[in-house]
Image (cartoon, rainbow, N blue to C red):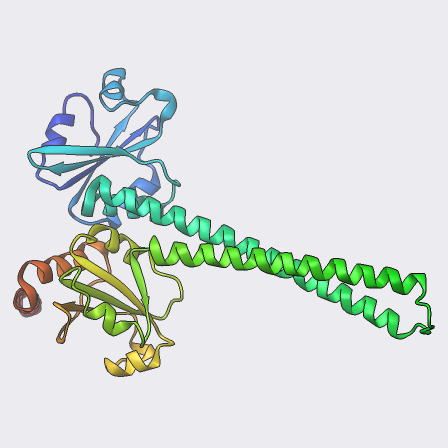
Length: 327
């Protein structure tokens, strides 16, 4: 929808939870914006302001030199909240931003940003560890080289100057290796600290699963059984949006005992299970579309009404599909 000063208020008053507005200097709609309109949730309402007036720019705290710019406005009766998009200009990043803001507003965006910063710090520390480990390997190789040289020397009662120099070099290299190993251990502790204290998602195995399941801190436990080593971005978004009611966990496909416990195989993954009140007998498998809106509704149903409400919604969906097929 093309907007201007005459229809912007009507656009903002539409009964949609989230409005996304593109401010642009271009005379036609960018392909990226068209693709977002086609692929994002129906709860998002898209508008576009071409060559905006100074009045509209001022209203949204913008200036012409800041364009193009995306503004998201979330309806939170009786008030609203809005935010400018500041991330990469690509389809996936903008879609994640809009769906995260739709699900949890500025609070969810703040948590997602914090997770991204933690992941960046973790990646930087892992690169430093790789560098230190490489330096240590080079130092060990140099020690082996010096020892090999000594093996071919004639040993006299009084060590040669060269042998003394090699021994000195070996001592220095050993000291360097000790320092590198100490720094390496400190970096690994930092990474473990990031993962254990800052992440919203627990990585689960056979020894930690039951403790996670029976935790009383939150009524709902959501577990993703995944083939991936890294935590999927969608799972991070969901953890940000439902952090107040739900504990989130990830089980990797290498955890064969847990997969067997829930009658799963690697070729059946990914799978999402919800557990209500720490009761394994009331596990709720998710069988809907893999997107933010659908999974969020599934979790919200479990929080609001438990298994009964989830089953009622499932039967309703089955009934609707049956009606459509019979038309």
